[in-house]
Image (tube, rainbow, N blue to C red; front, side):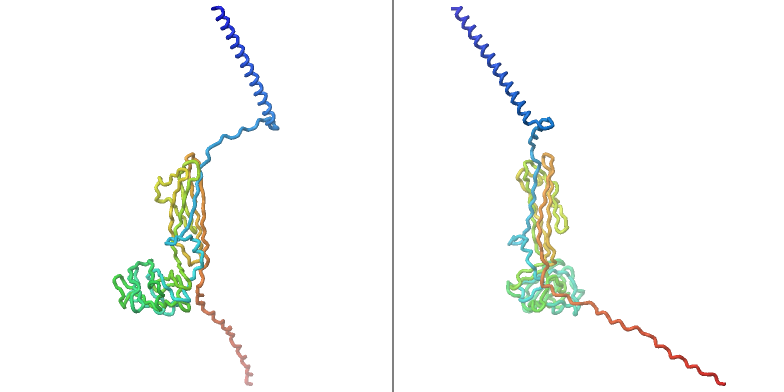
Length: 354
């Protein structure tokens, strides 16, 4: 029995050895085939100069990617796009009476009587004329339409509940607390019918400069319109970034939009956004457009630098209805003919007496 067990063990050992040798030979053949196959493809891919092909570059993480988008809207209840400012502004109120007149108080004295602009019936200064601080009262001759205390540079608007303004406006400008004292610092009368030459935007009417009017036939015409630019910076890349610069240029006027911003707000992860509002006043009576350019520069967490620029342009046409200025050029006097002195008569020669 023991003899049989020894024979079985020997047989199993021999069989295992044969299997191992067979596997080893199979592996050697496979390796040889792989090497032959690799040599074949190397020959196929070998360049003409016998150099081997350059291996493809190792993929790297894309650098930071930042985007800035700037929009412009009116700063009022309509929130309309600034493109509406491209409508032509009618500088001269004419054709129908206004429902609203708005002026900027300048504290300027009255013009001389011969220089009164169209639409101004009279203007007189008293006690040194208007001051930097003043009370302004406007009456239609029967009742007071407005009574306000203002400082030079403030806007004063006159309206009558949406109705057309009366034909004449009596404007009293006095020192603070003076009310409608008939001996005000300045007393003027404005013809508000807008007939004939009418009233003209940016024209001075004593201490008041007209900047805005509304009527039924010409609509809403305003020289100074509050607007707001909104600048949105977005991290469009796969890495976090920090905004380092955000500047805007409006018609040559540069502004650092990061002034006063907390550094924590300038850190943007992927997909996050930073928003900055930029309120300005658009001048609509000079014919100048609005050219806005916004540039952002950011640094990614990987050290890469990325930037972007956006532009918003509003083309403002030249305002119409400007009356032709009077010709103040003095006529050139006619050149008098040169004075030619008369040729003296020759003195007769008197013969001597013999």
